[in-house]
Image (cartoon, rainbow, N blue to C red; front, side, top):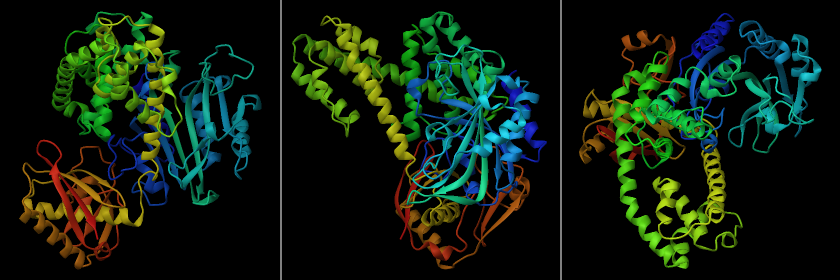
Length: 623
């Protein structure tokens, strides 16, 4: 089965059962500062999971492109990817377990033709005042899964959310495919990393709300949120034990083989080829959604993905610019489903080549510095090197932990290994390249050199995960009173900018918190003080007029015919929400918004700057 066939079978199955298909949204979240990328199909639906009516109703389904950064270091095995496609269906306060679980079973056994004896199930074992999910297990038994293949697991395995400290959450039930391999031990069960069981689908029964006191209260609206990974499921259905051999990844691997002149069948080539295929595929989609390599947030992740691919390209002895060739294969393989990567092809190629050339230049410029460090190693200036390089890297990554690296790093080889890691994480210099330079000056003990690198890689992974967890601390898509006010303020700002600067101005992004708004728009030059003051004056005038804000649901064509602005490049659903600020602004938008502008307070622009060629960025507050 191909990815195309799986997508179609899934959507058709749920459309036949009263669901409306919603389009895949941009990987860059709109108006959501709590997460860098869309990492699950439910992320764009948070307002509706919390009770806001969706314009297409209570039954939805989609194929959503996703990107997860928490396990970047794990990419390289047979089943991890940063970019992947997720199939999902949702009940927004509509059907419940009695309908969902039989649909699960029918889709797996009748549509995908998986023998029922190959399916195992996990359910929530219960804790913290939430009972064991016997109800879900009972329904699975009714549809044909015997008790012996139903496992009750704890919160770590079978509980979702909340993403922040409070919010909707609930037990989940996961479906696993038994590959037929022997159990690795007596305790082997679904979720065991040995590879006998592959998770292919997950039902989240979102029935609780976690309070600030840590209690779990039943929600007024019970939701179902499901997720099925396309890559992993296609691999399983085709009897593959390696996701990278499925049809949307294998052509990319073959392109890497052709460019490098090396074979994927050679064990030492598999990990670098998988990482290059995954990271450059992810980069293509992020670039298509408007992001560019940078040193902060989404741009930093993008740069890190590209540079890691370049680093491993060198380990395959690729001695030419190659990212554009890989991008061409990604576009050829997936452009029929995601036309935005075809539309953005020229920009994707331009940014990849720019980053690749910049990386090579950086490495060339770094070589003299590494040579100087090699001389210091030879002269045994270890105390000076530790102060400059070793202490800062460990103090950053081992922050809040008692970690005595001095017992691990004593001689020149340990210091060299630490500096090699620092050069890679800071500047993108390949460890092997740095090591090769150091070997001209000192005899390297392999164990002493590798030990700090292994420890630092683990610390770096923990640091990255902690940073991402902090990013989610406020929860997904904050809809606090202040954020809702700022959301409405962006509409006023957008209309005011178009009035002052001209109708060629349009929004290309925004980021809202409870403290401020950030608004990106098209404009070729810096705004004057007079222009900024005029924009502020118009917005505050409309706030003072206390204009009503209304919402209508209609088709996109109807919305455009009525003069609604809709500039974002993503596909829109067949029905959209249009918010109108009476007599001043009309935009297609997901909401939510205030009812009248008078509640916003005084609007003040605090900063105006460039955000790229032909783009400007405004920061503003409500006082």
